[in-house]
Image (cartoon, rainbow, N blue to C red; front, side):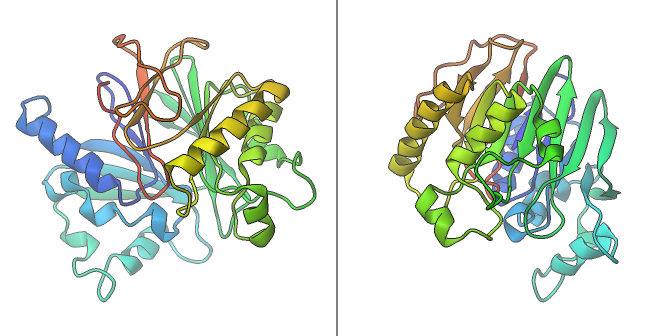
Length: 300
């Protein structure tokens, strides 16, 4: 998943296997004469589970000298982030050590709070999950995105939301939120670190988010099931006062214009999406279907 805009370095949200697709797109642009300069960008990792980090060694721009990636992730207990990443990017798990990559990764052991990424303000906050996990809020040019990819729904009740999560999502233009389970599935896996589609709607309603993107779909859900859950989520959203709900999927690009003018560009037309306005100078977010598959914001 990528937050991008004209003339700005990309902010990548998690580094799953879809990072390879994004790297291939950047490489294609360079071959077409659109790019040319070495890659420079920032990655915000929510946590270090496999589906959020496996794309790192397959990111083509890091195979070029001069490339730079600033990598932020929650501070790990007793071990620097750089050592943790080196641990799984080394034999026997992977044949190439991270120091062998021609590009350079700068590691940032990040605490909760605010920091700057170029002209964007980023807020990191703890989110209930399994192990140290952040959610992020990114604000730039009066527009805002909150990213809560993995969120343990409390068993105390569907409307109980952690105050830190509520504040992170307060009045955002776009909330990208975990929506892995229906109620029956959650009842079978109440402590797996995720939540129901309805709980995602409740978080959006309680925080005043304008648009909710259902994300981190269960791998067992096919497109038809995702669309069924989207219909259900929209019905609940109407009752709870959430203006818009969409289902994230591969290739979806959301253009962040002033509130109420959000538009989507969707190659295959799924999940009730409409065509983007095509206006220039907009911030855009490429939204993949799952943390394992971040996607480039095409056509931005």
